[in-house]
Structures are given as structure tokens and as C-alpha cells.
Image (tube, rainbow, N blue to C red; front, side):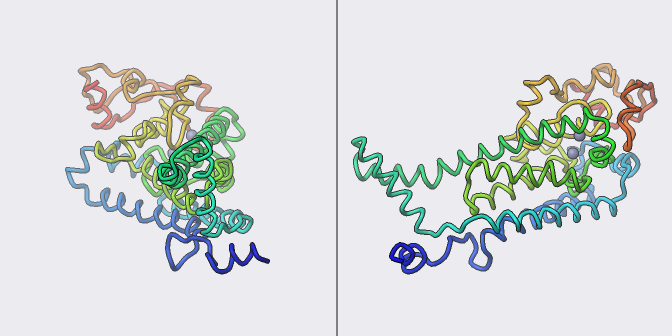
Length: 339
Ligand SMILES: [Zn+2]
Ligand SMILES: [Zn+2]
């Protein structure tokens, strides 16, 4: 009774909230979806306007975007909404079982941390400051790093399995690869089962394994969504912090969406270390070799050897190498010549 009145009564009746009008639990479910569409709309506007200051960083031409993709924008929109519905239901279930942590918990935890430091002869004032910094900044940052490492590891091995197993590829993952020219709101264009396994369960595992709070999960889920959209945006902006600070960026993931890189760059969405460790890494510098372009060959039309991948079946395509005449984009050719 006494403890209950302290924890739930006088000191702090409610769990802490980032925003006054919505609980952190609901915010962690809805904010990533809002951010997904708002950020995608920004890229849609950039793509529609075709301003030269943005166009020079496009990875593919607008013509390619219209001609090479095997899924219509409407089908992509529909499947993304389905994935987000499934994601919302899973989020509501997960948060239902997540206990509410009253505000007073943080005060108690900081005090316990400070008391432990004092026991090791740390000055009381310093212990108070250190416990605050550790509790409010260092520990949440560590939990975030753990969460994104778990998410990356989960996604690497599952994504790789989807490519190695023909049935998994044909049944689930080939849908995402209908987009040879990725664009922002196509980031979550997946088979619903793949979306559930790869993204929703992956993020849920990151949240649970790291032991982060619901408030911290708002940032983790939202930031991961932002990162995924950015990886599919179709632009290689040199001033985009997400592309500067993370080696796994739009150009890196775009390689995976191309025929020559489909067996490479399985890592997503943050790091590239699993690709490096397990020999599936492919950098932009290796594109010319794959395309068999010479350094001086700024050719728009080029005879290249690629493994053509049909959207519905990787197996038939990977078994035979076809020599095809491919229109290499000006951007790719210029990039190859510059290297
Ligand atoms: Zn893939
Ligand atoms: Zn992708």
C-alpha cells in the first residue's frame, strides 16, 4: 500500500511522456509511420521538381525510374500500407505487455547509481553529476547501439537467407526487388510476411534485447524508419547526415537493387560490417569492373555482362549469365569514368 502510494500516487502518478497529448507507447507506434510518409513526400517533391541542384545527385534517371521498375506506384503504396497495418497491430500487442515505468523510477535509479559510486569513494557531488550523465545519456546511447546492432544482425542473416534459398526468394523477397530503381516510399515495399519477419520483428527484437525504455524506443523506431527511407531515396546527397555518418547509405543499398550487386550488400540498414566479415561487400568502386566499363568509356550504350534477375524468379536468372545490351545511365557511366 505504502509503496504503491509513493510510486503511483503522490510523487508521480503517470509514466513520463515525451508529448503531453499522446502516450509514449502510442507515439512509438504512430510516429515512425508519420515520419515515413512525410520524409517520403519530401523526396517525391525533390524528384518531381527535378532541380539541377538535386538532379546531379540522382542515382538513376527519371526515365529509368519509369521504365525499369516492375511494380506500379499504386501497388507499392498498397503494400506499404499493408505492412504498416501489420506493424501497428504488432506494436499495439508488444506495448500492451510492456510495463509502465513511473517517473519516480528514474530518480530512484540515479540515486542508486550515485550511492554505488559513493561507496567507491567518489565525491557526493561528482557522483550525483556522473549518475545523471550515465543514466540519462550514456546508458540510453549504449542501448541504442545494442538495438541497431541486433536489428542489423537480424536483417543481414534473414536477408541473405532470402537470397540464398530459392523458395524464400521467389515467395517473399522478389517483391522488394521489383524495384530496380528504388525510391523513398518504396522502402517498405515488401511481401507482408517479409515485412513482418525482417522489419517488424527485427525492430521488436532490438527493442527487447537492448532493454530500452518505451520513450527510447520512440527514437529507435523512428530513426530506423527514417534511415530505411533514406537508403531507398535514390539520391546520393553529400550533405545528408544519414549518408555521411553511416557507410550503409543510399548508394550502398542501390548496388543491391541492381543486377550486378544483387548477391552483395545484404547488410541493412545501418552498418556494413557483416558484409565485410562474410565477403558479400561491394563498394561503388567495384561497379566499373562489374559493368566492364573502361575508365574513358563514358558511353551511354554499353555491352555489359550481367546476371539478369527476373522479379519473380532469381533461380532461373542466376543459373545463366546473359550478355545483354544495357542502357547504362549517364550517372553510372560518369561515376565509372571518374573512378
Ligand atoms: Zn535483397
Ligand atoms: Zn531495398
